[in-house]
Amino acid sequence: MAFNPLQERGIPLDRQIRNWSELNTTPYRKQDVHPYSRCRGIVMNGIEVEAVMFSHQMNRNTLDPEVKKALATVRRVEAQQQKAINWLIPGDESTLEVTIGYEQVAVDLTAWAAQHEPDPYLRQVYEFGLLEDFDHLYRYANLYSLLQGKDAQWLVDGLTEIMPGRPTIFEHRDPADEIRRPMTSLAADPQSVLNAMTVTAAEQQTMNFYMTIGNRFTEPLARATYLEIGLIEEQHVTQYESILDPTCTWLENLLFHEYNECWLYYSFMETEPDPKVRALYELHLNMEIEHLRIACEMMRQIEKRDPEAILPKSIDRVMTFQENKAWVRQILADQVDLTAKGSQFINIAELPVDDAYYAYQARVNEGGCPTEQVIAETASAKGDEYRLETEGEHPVPGLRRPDARKGASTEYARCLFNEPGGFPHGASPTLQQPPAGGPS
Image (cartoon, rainbow, N blue to C red; front, side, top):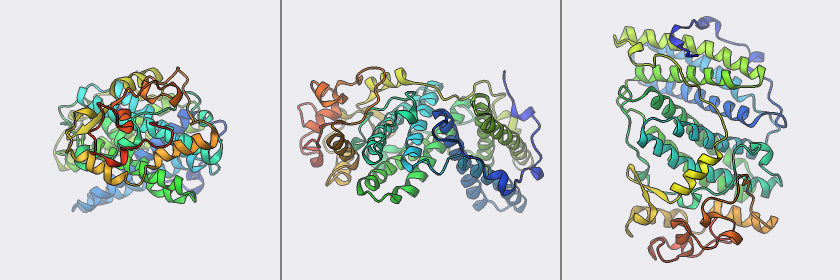
């Protein structure tokens, strides 16, 4: 059934402030929580962080005192919502366990966006980024095995496979090659706007999380791994935010933010199995309906525009977390060798020898690469690297386990082994010798 938040009555703003005990939500039991319940909470935490930070930025660029007051009042509620959602994570869930949840979000949320993206270029943007987050999940799962001696299977419950994606060592690109073509929001399909705002906020929260907790480890390899992947997440935020429409006014952006929150809370209220968490999403949805009404009224008064002419007529499709293993495998097989050049995606073999990619690779990977070292040390300590390949061997022969590789059949693997047809010799001297364990 279609849902139109513009036609619903929300909770009045003066009744939305909660006390400390109401905000101090009872955390889930990590042994019992469904992986996708964990994922939904991680997403909504990121959405609320984005809402608060956007409101702060709008406040810094606004003169009208009445607008500032409205923003401050709604922002305080958004900040309370963020606390209530984020406090669902239990204190006994380790940083690495939460991290694996973040990367499962990155894989399955981005997979949903790509499969429900009507614009072919934007769909390619999501598919490109997904293969990199897929590899991060593999690296962190190996770090989890190495440091905590545990199997990440119990965290992802077999819903998301754990194996190499586009190897993280090769994801480091010149900053100019992270910029994508922006959409025009008024001409775009509304689903494209919702997808972009959602994935941008989720990736931004992942970036924020890693930059905050990465230095809390005592193990040098863990610190180095979070440092490396954290910088890739900054690249991803650059990629995804650049597809948003830069010509939108502050009020248009506020309107889209509030509508996006309504869409996601409605989606997760419809799909969350835990009754207490579902009730929390329903409560927040009813708050967001009022926030959306306020944003609509501000647009009518200040810009003299009809918000209903900008927003979707109704919510006809809910965002769902679902298993995407076969689809991800196909994207891996088809696109693992892609890299970015400007706003386009090309096969790595098409880059000229003097491309900025090689200079950047040589600089950041000089002296070794932490995400490769994680695999080598896990294999050394455990006798094998950690993988969860529920659907058979890796779809890319060059990324299979070393004893099943039978030749490196990816451009990246040929680069690592310096084989004919791989990267130009001398272009990236730190990649001339394969790390222990070969390409992973």
